[in-house]
Amino acid sequence: GIQVEQSPPDLILQEGANSTLRCNFSDSVNNLQWFHQNPWGQLINLFYIPSGTKQNGRLSATTVATERYSLLYISSSQTTDSGVYFCAVDSGGGADGLTFGKGTHLIIQP
Amino acid sequence: NAGVTQTPKFQVLKTGQSMTLQCAQDMNHNSMYWYRQDPGMGLRLIYYSASEGTTDKGEVPNGYNVSRLNKREFSLRLESAAPSQTSVYFCASSGGTPTPYNEQFFGPGTRLTVL
Image (cartoon, each protein chain N blue to C red):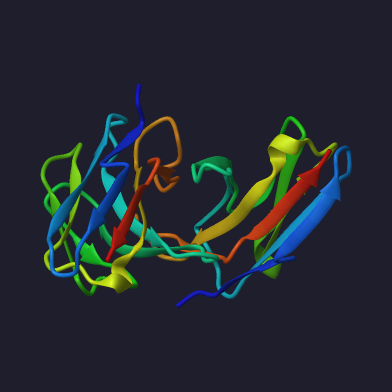
């Protein structure tokens, strides 16, 4: 099956810093989603981005499908950005399940 | 609009006991999913239902059964719980407008401990 690798596994930053999280995948995809899992365990949808670039406030994401990677940018980090960021992909043709990476654990210190 | 709801939020079982995790969505989605998340890991797919009346195995189906009761509800059953099934269980759904048909939305999770 498709493989998903996220880097870095852990990241500690000061409030106000910028960061880039990377997701590599091993096959073509028809779905790529970025999620934020907050300290209470809730999974929050950030982006649906199988290709192209999107922005939402301080967050933006780019997927280069031909090179099989996606990047999540977080600018001007806030302590509420702390948590685990997951990339998840689906390479099937229908409504198949997502394959998740192991996540990037982000800690924003005040 | 509650999105995806799951009950219970927490559960403790003894080895060999059975239980059913409930999931419901009010987004008129066609597809529903069950995942488990173990410490330090991403989520892994247990079962999914592409549409009402169909179910298919995911990556880790052993020890579980599912029922797609109707379009809104998708339940996960553990017939004889084992300590290896201690995990957090997430339900998800996809397949309605105006969002893309395969964009998944997740419930809050059920934290299950098997002693």
